[in-house]
Length: 331
Image (cartoon, one colour):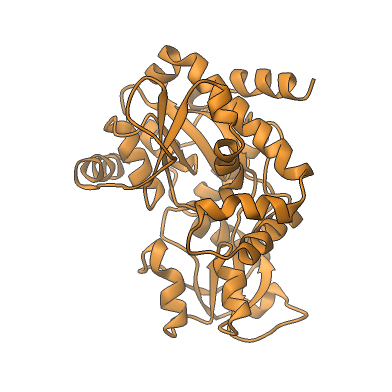
């Protein structure tokens, strides 16, 4: 864990996140700087909160940067290059176990299951997970939740497969297209676009097979939360409202709105992605993380051999703000 923490700190000094800033953002006390693990339709409520003016209603704007991995997102938070990190909570667990001072705490959860879909090279209408026995599969990077969740699914099903682990997360799709692996896990819209182009076929949802886990969350240093309680509450309120809107709105209209946030993705692809994620019940209603879900995540990390010891829920998670906001929004 000390080695992992050192790696994170080095990344904080060397990594320059690629900015994707919501319009008009300049660094001041009316800005929340969020570093997201990647830019994805999977996180639609975050972008809708901006598009629908919910952040503005709370009196601030969001400046968003793409970290390109949970380790880099956490590095940005630790180095004060970001106020809030948006990634898998495993990054907080690793940092806590590394003995970091002013360790970040999770204050809100957005997705509640793995958002990746298993893509194969041939169509399998009656796919069975046993079909993966002995196959080569690209499933993310070692220590990342996508990889660990997939490993857990295989282990629980008694399946032995060769997981390709030497490919950067952002390059997995390109590697699969280039001929590596029999299967590859992909997020939307990449999965649907691969299928539409005849490059591969979606055969299963990893999230449906693995069950609920706190997959992607918002976290910040304890000191930042203590000093900026109103902003944190406002952020949670805006996104909670956006989730509620997304679950009730016409997806065609939502997709149209999100085209401004995904320049290289068509409206049809965005809509297909939203339909896919809605079908697997990907987003939470209440952003307060549940203790049992947290324990499920630790089971997955422990099973992957990446957990030196288990962490107490209350040590790295606070639910007070999210529970308060959920009651207000749904009163």
